[in-house]
Image (cartoon, rainbow, N blue to C red; front, side, top):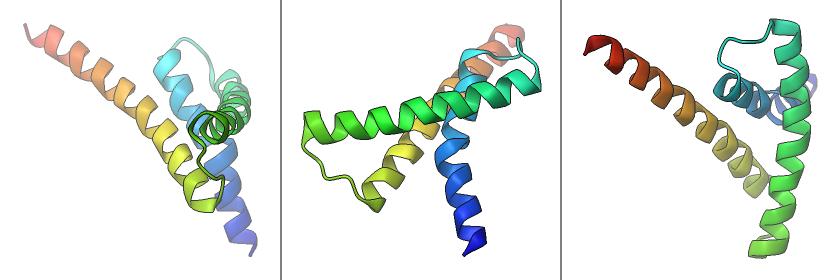
Length: 94
């Protein structure tokens, strides 16, 4: 049970924000600032996205939908990070 709580807390409270801090602030901030920002961003982005999903789209908030929203938020940030790195590598090759 404790391992599930730890994994769920990391998934909800840390991972989306961490991915977005790397997408927004590439290497400009130190690790303590990045951890604080990732906690704050996750605490803001996850509930707001679930709120808009429920109110605007009329989709129920349950475990599966919440999980998919969190994965989508994290994947969107990872796509931005990969696009930037691909663009940088490609510009160095030319």
